Amino acid sequence: QVQLVESGGGLVQPGGSLRLSCAASGSIASVNAMGWYRQAPGKERELVAKITSGGMTNYVDSVKGRFTISRDNAKLVYLQMNSLKSEDTAVYYCNANLRRIGSPFPVDYWGQGTQVTVSS
Image 1 (cartoon, helix red, strand yellow):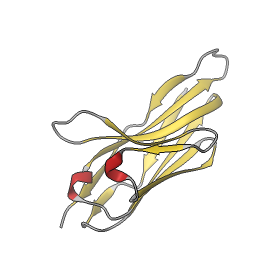
Image 2: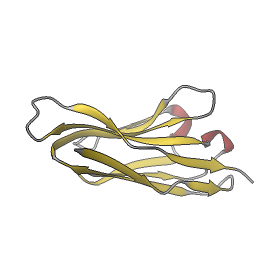
Image 3: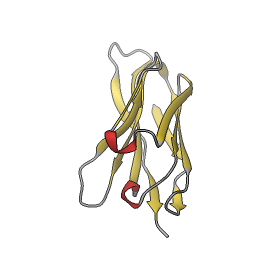
């Protein structure tokens, strides 16, 4: 069994900062890319930031220069969010493309989501 557990969401004022964390655990053989997606009410889920196992990153244009994704090890990923805006309000989901022990192919796993609300 594999789990992705997120933490760090909450309520913050515009211009503030939050850091999201996501830890993968379970019968994991290897982890490829990890990333963060978000879904605002009435909108589709969108990719916010992704980081490969080699450390390459990419971001959606709306967060470039404000958000930073990083990995502490193969199974732990962070999203540092600065200069938050009201339009960043959404449920943020951790995603990991990983291969389970005994499985020949990697698949995508998702966390349960953490709410980020930016409001005064």
